[in-house]
Image (cartoon, rainbow, N blue to C red):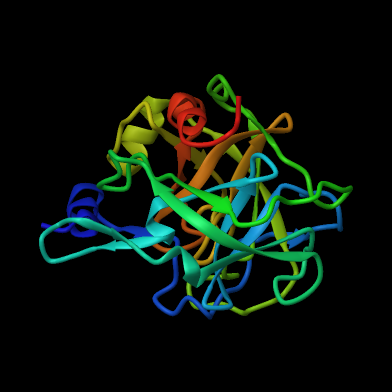
Length: 256
């Protein structure tokens, strides 16, 4: 059984946040336009020149994104990583189509335990180091979990609704962190590697937001992984938890 099929069976209506057509994207559900420089760590991950996922700058050389953004499961249930030459990132712009700088991806590293939507991490090593500025900066990685009930900021260029519009401006919204027990009762999953983020209906992450950041007190706490029952439902969204994977991130990047 493929990793995606197993996840669908396990948690009912889980849907990865990449679009079936990577060149079609939109915005965070219920979000508002981001002001230039507010999210200097956010990047657009582009496959063959078109936006497909989000990502976060963690150093001049590395971007953190989701594993499911950069590969697929073959018939033998092996995860195949796409050629890094297909990918670039746009940094330093809230416009997914222009501005900022575009850098080629030289290497893709996927978490070795990725499967069933858990450990959904990839590291992208850039061919040329980024030059930091007011619009391009790294975000600090969180070393502890978000306390239950705290406000978390999400951002991205994902769709407005499941089949929604396609604005070009980066969007952001706020969500609330859930306890592991609440996550289990809400979506049927429990894991130390998973961060559940709650929101009212008509808000949350959507297709094209995959790999994008969830930030708490200026630190990266999560990477967008999947939604339940479609975009903007009353179900919480699932993000891969950064603090639980610090050792892996540090081992495979230049972050200390």
